[in-house]
Image 1: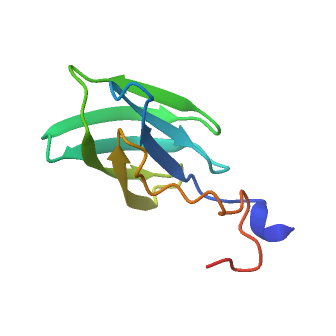
Image 2: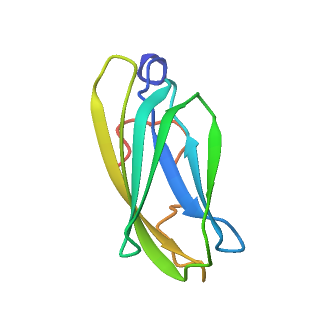
Length: 109
C-alpha cells in the first residue's frame, strides 16, 4: 500500500471528441506546476501554471486537427521535472492503454 501513497503528478493528454480542444488531466497524487505543452507539427504552445490532483483543463484550438503529438513538460511541488509525449488523433488511434491499472501494481510494466 505504501507505493500508492505519494505518487508524483502524472499528466494525460488527448484530443476532445470534436478535435477542437486539447484536454489535459492530472492523474497523480500531487499538484503539477509549470506545465508546458507543445503540439507538433502544428507549432502551437500552451502554458498552465498548475493543475490540482484529478484536475482537468481544456485548451481550445482555432480549428480541428486530425493528428498531432503533444510534448508535455511539468514539475511537481518539490521541483522535480517530468516529461512525456502523447499521440493525438481525431480518428481514435491514440496511445491510451485501456489495460493500464489506475495504481502501480507490483511494478507493472
